Length: 205
Image (cartoon, rainbow, N blue to C red; front, side):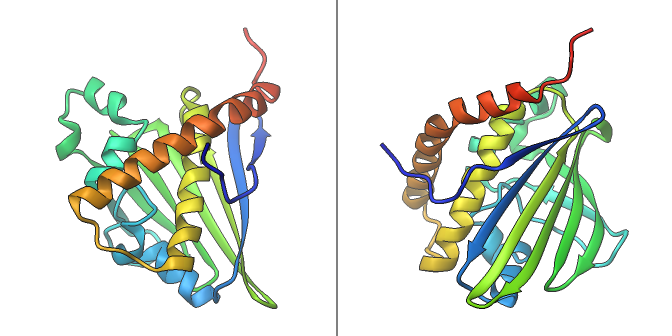
């Protein structure tokens, strides 16, 4: 069995909205963590997409999937339902907060629909031996939240691994190993997140 490296995230409710919050204590400076959060060379190793666009508040962003990110994305089915080849699909977003190396907040949307747009926020606080990273996301879609919650947990574990071990060449063989590793971790975590989300599910009707 695989072993997850980070603690479970917290499920949030605000009216009809569902959110998730994760905290990671990282033994690296805020500047190093910031680069891994915002630059392609770091993103490729833990985030499903690149984040392309001017780093300025209000700027429009393009989020093209990495090949391995698309294979793991829980949104592939939704992309196909829009009549688009997932391999050619590019999500869109907007940069809401850009305050290096403290806060990075943006939206991640699909097909321009509000109900398929998530808000992602990364807050970095310096600690005596590194950085306290708090990642909060408010989910646009009312469905598929378990896979989303698991997915972000695994992504943050991969981020921690990247910071500890450094980047490695993303060959086809290496990408395949990453995909299988992430799938194994996802299977391990799914029951716990399904139970956590069920506890805060909105009333029916």
